[in-house]
Amino acid sequence: MATSAPTTTRLDLSNLTGADVLADLSPWVSAYEEVYAHALHLPDHNDPSFGERLAFSAARPGFRMTAGHTDGELAGFVYGYPLPGATAGGTVSPRPRAWTPRT
Image (cartoon, rainbow, N blue to C red; front, top):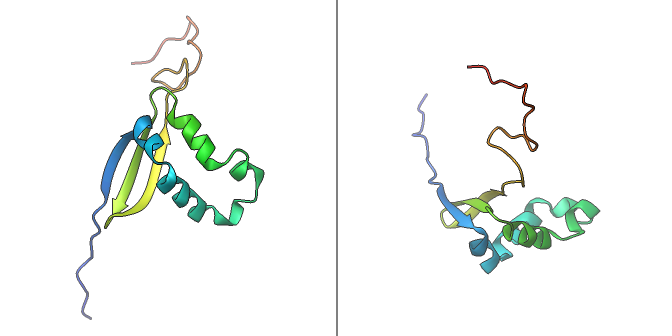
């Protein structure tokens, strides 16, 4: 039985700032609307619209987006921003004084 050589696809990643995303929301909105076409009528997908939510998020301090492209086509994206008062450990409020990390 002959097997073919595995194919590879190159994934190009870009790291974007909020200003980069705000300069043109259309690729991200188009991708979202394609993926969630079946649910765009639901309130959690359209009120406010994804474009409005993304613009709000992109304007927040520390916003970053990582986008992946294959052959020049958008393959996907993920974004986020730090929450006010969040720590590296993921807690939002200060740890109690009695809390001691284990080493």
